[in-house]
Amino acid sequence: MRATGIYHPLFATHPRPGLETSMTDLIEIRKPLGTAAQWVPGAGMDGNDYELVYRGIGRVQPNIDWRARDRNHSGELNATLAVRVQTPFGKNEVGAVRDVDDNIVTYGPDPLIAKDYMINVISSEAPDAEPLMKYTFIIRNAVQASQKWLRTFLADTGTRVIG
Image (cartoon, rainbow, N blue to C red; front, side):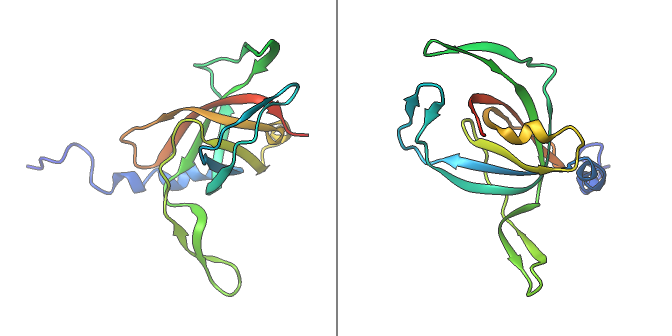
């Protein structure tokens, strides 16, 4: 009798390929470096320095559990778009080892992702995803779970739209 639970130890490797096929976005996640941000009227918070910690595939979708809402930032009314961002384990291009043809031989380590990290959608294969590339998303809840096939982050738009 096994005392390890009902799933085989390698069960987590089974759903990964299927889930990754639905991750059609190239995203970047940046860690805040702790420098003081300044309020810029009309632009929101500005001046934070960020370090790139993740670049790779991901999925960005509306978060139906945490709907968009209006926010008042320093007297300016802004709508906030809430999204769920999912990334696979083991697909980080930051720190990846590449061969002479620039193909990835070994992916970089998975970083610890936390609240206030910044997410940008760089490109997407989804037909209606272009508006997502204009927003900077800020992680509000880095959900930690025992799933071994993907990570989920709850994020919303800051007060700034790029471009």
